[in-house]
Length: 206
Image (tube, rainbow, N blue to C red):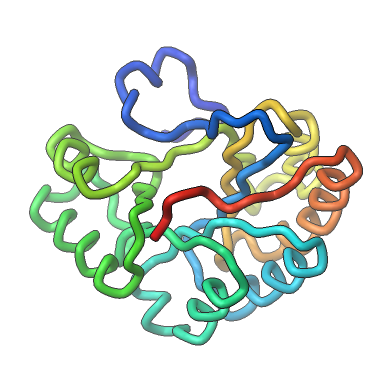
């Protein structure tokens, strides 16, 4: 289970998480999960640079190990990085000690104060401990770009309808999302720019 748009009834229970950035600026905080990815990440970085936008990349430790040059490029080009665990474990079905060790293993590589739990799932023991070290980042909108059974047009429509109203957006840089990303991201960034919004990285990552 996950939420495209988190239901209001959930937020009071996870009140310590960052669901939306409070700001007077016309800003969208675009985030990408699961990278670095050898095919998708360079495309995303090139496109962000062309628009002079910065974003936040929630990286898997195992992918940072595989593609350290892409990870360094993210930081060199002014983007923020966050910890998305080492191996994308599901907290609802993983022993607490195993889960925390996995996050710590990723942190050795990523060194960020931001953490996004895979699948958006945490059990209370993990939550209690992790929030002491990290700002736990959730999302305002996840348009399901990882689903290969829906069209890019559906995903783009979800993004377009929510410009300016839901400002932490989750997209993905992985094998499942790569075709969607190449279809939707150029059009989405152009739409954002035409409406005079900026894409910014999340604050306080490092």
